[in-house]
Length: 78
Image (cartoon, rainbow, N blue to C red; front, side, top):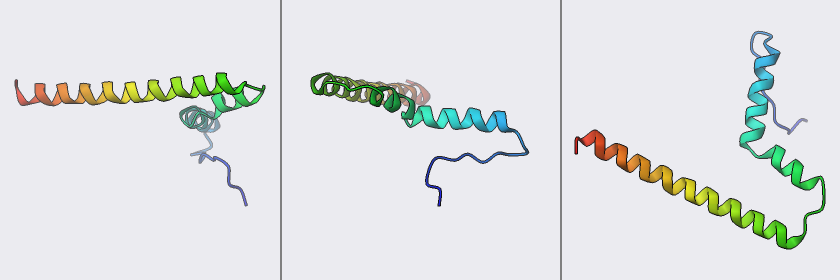
């Protein structure tokens, strides 16, 4: 039984499947987790990094919400 990430190869196009797999792994932050787990990271540095990542995610989410609001207002014709 295989429980890892897998991508379907369509019409023998392995290069396209590999590109899609890399995109999926990047989106799921697998590469960054590998990079940080390769070496020991002190507890304080890890806590600070995770806090910063959380803040960036929340900030980006709020910016996206604000842009959607502006686009809806523009679409209304205001």
